[in-house]
Amino acid sequence: MDCPDLDSPTGLPRAYLLDEKRRRVLAEIDGAPFSWFHVKIALVAGVGFFTDAYDIFAIGIAATMIGYVYGETSPANPVSRALTYNQELGLKVATPVGNVVGQLFFGWLADLVGRKRMYGIELIIIMTATFGQALSGSGPGVNIVGVLVLWRFIMGVGIGGDYPLSAIISSEFSAIGLRGRLMTSVFAFQGWGNLTACLVSLIVLAAFKDSVLHDSMPSLKHVDYLWRLIIGLGCIPCAFALYFRFTIPETPRFTLDVKRNVAQAAEDVENVLSRGTFYHNPEEAFVRVHIPKATARDFTRYFGDLKNFRVLFGAAYSWFAIDIAFYGLGLNTSDLWQAMGFADPNPNTSSNAFQALWHISIANLITSVAGLIPGYFVCFLFIDSWGRRPIQLMGFFVLTVLFLIMGFTYDKLVATSASRGGLMFLYCLANFFCNFGANTTTFIVPGEVFPTRYRSTAHGISAASGKLGAIIAQVAYHQMKDIGGPNKFVKHIFQIFAGFMLTGVFSTLLIPETRGRSLEQLSNERQEGFVTGIVGSTDITDIYARDMRLQCI
Image 1 (cartoon, rainbow, N blue to C red):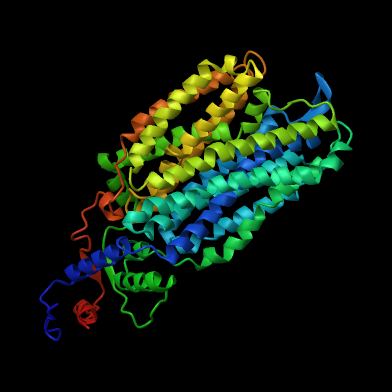
Image 2 (cartoon, one colour):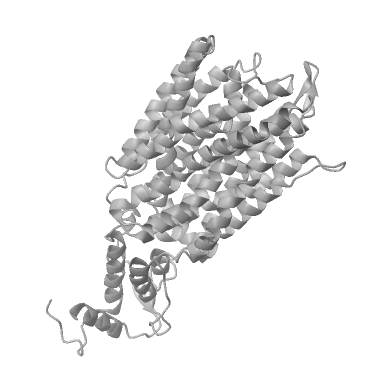
């Protein structure tokens, strides 16, 4: 290239030079080749989702075990204990309620003080609350179920914080061509966490088999060890990931568009892409620029624009709709298998109790291997070639059809052992299209379509809407499933799920296709002239000239 006379003024406005430099920094991130740093981001962020899924879905079988030890007997079956509806509902709803709080609070904080400063704190909360559950006890003044509900709420706050932080960090460090697959690989750790929870429950059951079989009903004291081990082991991946969470650098996009320091962001990009770390050079000129700043008035202005509000509403409602089905199925898998006749819900001997727990664990394992994990894998293959919106539309449409089939043929499907296999197949297929569909894309899209200064907040709002759907699904399921008799209303619950899936088809039409577009293009804000001025008296022309010299060497 021809080098200008760098000792003479360039004649360009200062703001223009910094605006150009900002675009160069963003272009470097968007065009970066795949590197080990991207692998590190996927692993460190993914471990959080692994732990999240393990802790959330382990309660499915743990609740049954807790019921065997601390539940109440009923006149119909005085030799077997079980949790009451309200106790089981409290255990399963506490975490989603905590999720809502964590997603909104941490999402806002990450936009306010930075992604790096928050990353790792939520993992400490998860680890502490998980350990607290495993050590919970009861006494004259406190019930163990109440203690567990409190700890699971606190754990939910930490898990909720992990959603916007991991999504935004992985999206803001990603190149355009691999952003979908990187975010999918992070979210797919949920499937491995679910699978691990199933495997751990089987291993623990096998290890304590003889002890449980020698227990007397209704006092299954060795089952008390089982659920504590299953839940407590969720601390281990947190401990491994904690150090790496604190070593993840701040995203250059946050430094650019929230801290408004273009020079520091340029240096961070160079260091991150070359060494996977960041280093602050004290001799680097601190240049703070005038760009749109996050304020209550600016938030109202941005989302008051119909095209931006429509995207937020579409992302939030789509997540709400899919979580109605995903958590309505996932947190009640044990109940559904019992309703299908795969496990005895009211065992009258220790042998029957062990067999019930074993069958529930096997059923959860089948669901994970045959539905959840393949769905994530197929979505990973197609997310950057097919696109987010087509996959989400397809997923909602197929789920609508599957839930209608299960709802209207439920009585026939549970009538014989052979037909139950067909219901299990449809159930696994529904889990497959949850993940090869809206369950994955609703996580990805909110991490892409909003400006940097509101990206984490808006993702938190969308994720909290999803967990609101999970709460509604749990409460409705437990209140409705026995209308007309034990599990008689389950078929109508499937039909209700189908209605929500159909509404998800329409909400998907409100979101844009994000494949192949930069985060700045998706923000609906004009990028040329984004920097409108500078703060202070730093000689920007000298900084520009230094950069030009580096390009000419």
